Amino acid sequence: MKTTEITTIVYEYNSVDELNAQDRNLIEKARQATKSSYAPYSGFQVGAAVLLANGEIICGSNQENAAFPSGLCAERVSVFAANAGFPDVPVIAVAVASFSGNEFTPMPVPPCGSCRQVMLETQERFKYPIRIILSGKDRIWIVEGIDKLLPLSFTSDCMKKS
Image (cartoon, rainbow, N blue to C red; front, side):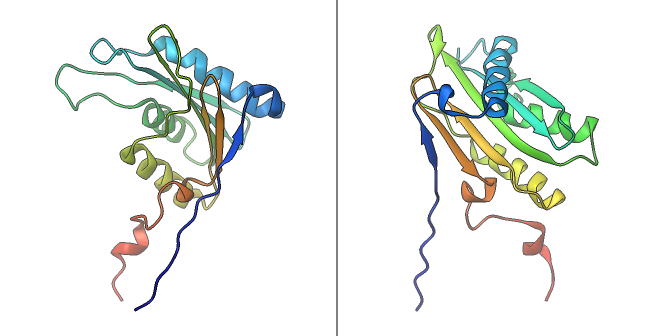
């Protein structure tokens, strides 16, 4: 038997003031995107901002639906829009913000498993690591590569025949 340890490094910041201008801007865009959320059932508004290698920023927000689970998370809305609008341009960062109870959540809210898988597919597609910037009112977490949030992940390599 062999034991393998999997670790994730998360860079934690107490304020957006500690970040570079590009990351601050991306967080602000994600926070603004929460306003376009359609969340009448959960009241939990999420916004995401995707930074592309060409400098474009694509924003999205969660879109709920009475026929659950027909809605879509902010991360997938923005990543799919980026991939559809700029199919040959790598995604280099995704910022996420969440708003609930008339304020931004105190701590960052990490993406769900489906969103992680979609971001991983995009990272694998372009062979370029996607920085994940998770914004809370009291804390910001940054992870260098979506694969760090989805270890032992399912990729196209899993389907290859030997």
